[in-house]
Length: 335
Image 1 (cartoon, rainbow, N blue to C red):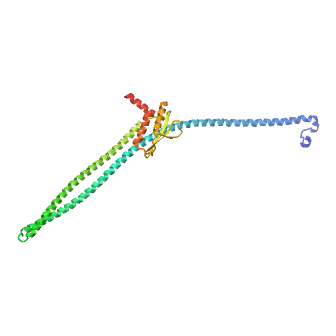
Image 2 (image 1 turned 180 degrees about the vertical axis):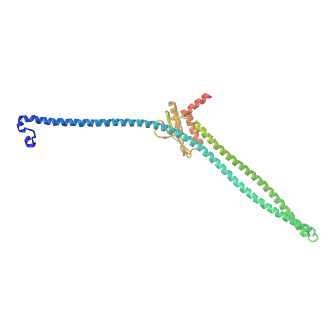
Image 3 (image 1 turned 90 degrees about the vertical axis):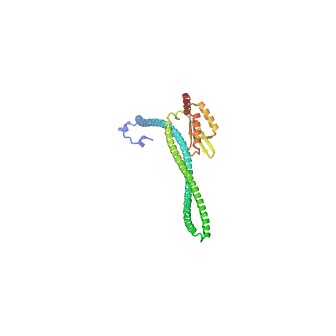
């Protein structure tokens, strides 16, 4: 295909320059277009490389910021974990104290209920005795009235002995019986007075005992306040899990069966363990590490009494925990 058939030649003197010399101008135009395309592609590549370089720098800055954020977050997590461990220990100790106070309060409430029941019974007995005393007093008054009347009749009858000896004997017999009844009534009344006095003394003793119980309860509340203050003073920042070999022990009771769960330094979760196996593990860790931190966990609904929880916690701390080992050494030095 010829050039004349495809494109219109716009060059001057195109007819005069046709021939053998027409090849080189065409080649020059083609190469010029290729060079322009190459330069345009280079400019586009340079702009693209500059954009990619800018994105790379932004990505590196974002990555550096992310690494700084991760490092600061890790430090905050370590601090929060230490504070969480310390607060859990405080919560365990407070729960044990609350368990002790609840047990004491239940005992005091049971004693107070028993004393109140006794007081109620004594009040009822006293009311019954008062009622009987009133009844006997009324009977005695009636008998006195009858005696007075009979005495008057007897005097009148004595003046009429000649007329009614039979009636005098009958009245004398009635008078003797009335005197006997009066004597018996007086004896019963005296016995009731003695019984009432005894019951009043018992009631006073019960009231005094109840007041003593109330004073003991008040003293226990004051002791609890003093104990809480002393406990807060004893919480020293020296005992911390930071940099220590942490061992966690969870202690619960269901019915009469106790349950111990153990989580060692290398364990990811708690596992059930016997008391003897727990002692063996802690003894081995104590020999291997001189900074063993024993964290005893007493859950809220553990089923344990205060004495059981405190005895177990105190045993674990004083036998294996680094903090209490140092205190024992100081006490031996002082002695």
